[in-house]
Image (cartoon, rainbow, N blue to C red):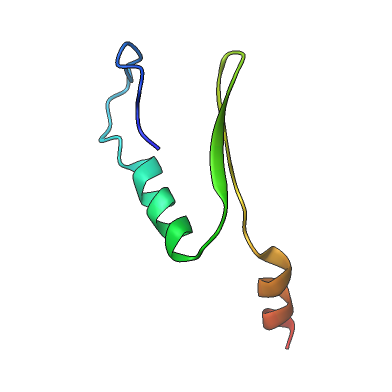
Length: 59
């Protein structure tokens, strides 16, 4: 994930590291993720093994 359109800037400031950090974590855990352009912005999605984690906590 990277910023392609340099015309879009963030008015509030920030480092821009958030998505890179999330991408790295998801890669390390071999989880799926992606982004899609939608009207009015971008939709980000990711997968988490919630059922497995819940079952482990139950035991």
